[in-house]
Amino acid sequence: MIQIRNSHLYYGLIAIVLHWGMALLVFALISSGLYMVDLDYYSEWYYLAPWWHKSIGIIVFILLLIRLIWRLNNIVPRPLPTYSSWELKLAHAVYFLFYILLLILCVSGYFISTSKGVGIDFFSWLEIPAVTKLNTFSADIVATTHEVSSYFLIFIFTLHFSAAIKHHFYDKDITLIRMLKTQLKKEENI
Image (cartoon, rainbow, N blue to C red; front, side, top):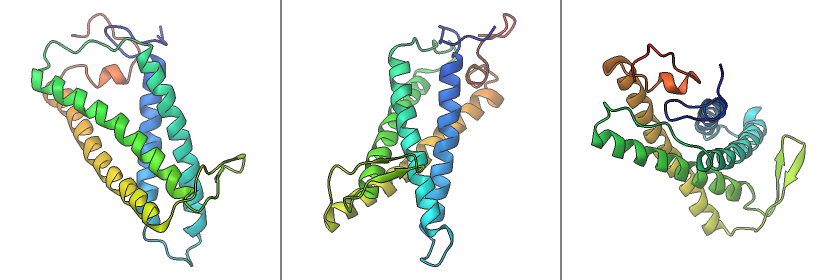
């Protein structure tokens, strides 16, 4: 049976879909962001890549808000008894940094995109209006914040991914499986 909400033992379908959906979208944003910095004015992607990047960034922001609301209104599966205290502390720090960095990236991305006082064309469906116009100095600070935050996010993602691999292949516990399946079989060790 598929469970929608989290339980004390496993994640529910909503948490799993938000986790993996956001992971794919953030990976696409980081990849496109790294690709876009090398585009020149004559590239056919010079305008199209930022359009996609901004629109997907807005989706990530919306999903981030949904994920925060969902997390605040759901229980979180209990840590496995095999986790050490340093693993728990590091995991909590990584989760916190994920949320903070994603929020910083979304907000700074918005201000970069609207720095000239022009709104963001969201998939040609609607325009997200600009709330202010930034001077060159402020726009540079926001752009640097966006870039540095993205590199921190890559580092945090690497830690998170490495921990998942460690738990699955070295510790042979169900940490990764709990984020892949909505319900564990009774014979699986907890």
